[in-house]
Structure formats: C-alpha cells, structure tokens
Image (cartoon, rainbow, N blue to C red):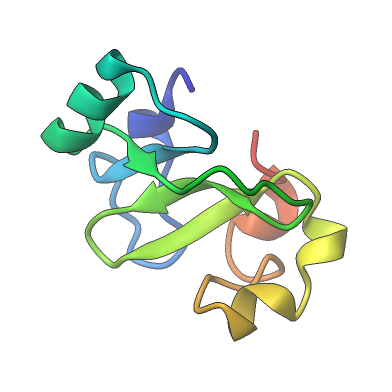
Length: 93
C-alpha cells in the first residue's frame, strides 16, 4: 500500500509508525519487509472487517475497507473503533 507511512494513526497521531497489513501468502520480498517492520503479516483468512493499516507505536489496526460492517467487531478484537477519530471519514483511503 503506497503512502502508508504518511497516514496518521487515529489513536496516537504518529505518521512514521503506520504500516500496511498484508493478507494471504507472503512472498519473499513481503517477508523481508515484515522483518524490517515495513509491513504487518496477518494471515490468509480475509473478511469484510479486516483492517488495512497497523500502527507499530500503539499496536492498533485501523483503516477498514468496509467500516459500516466493522462497528463493534473492531472493539471486540482490540482494534480501534471505526467511528473513532479519523476512521469515520477516511474509510481506509
């Protein structure tokens, strides 16, 4: 995801700690990016409420592809609520 490092975390406000979350089987390059801390690997099961970004500073996941489906689920899984902060207007873009 281009520009993830410029996205602002809606919880802590930091920009340089936000990385994209990758779902599916990672390539060798993706594994290297994850080892450097430039990417978060999340597994192969993908659903409608899976977040697209992770903040390494405060360990939250955010930027839901379908925030209207994520309400409540985000809090249950320890992710930021999609209606909190910048998430209400950014919708993962």
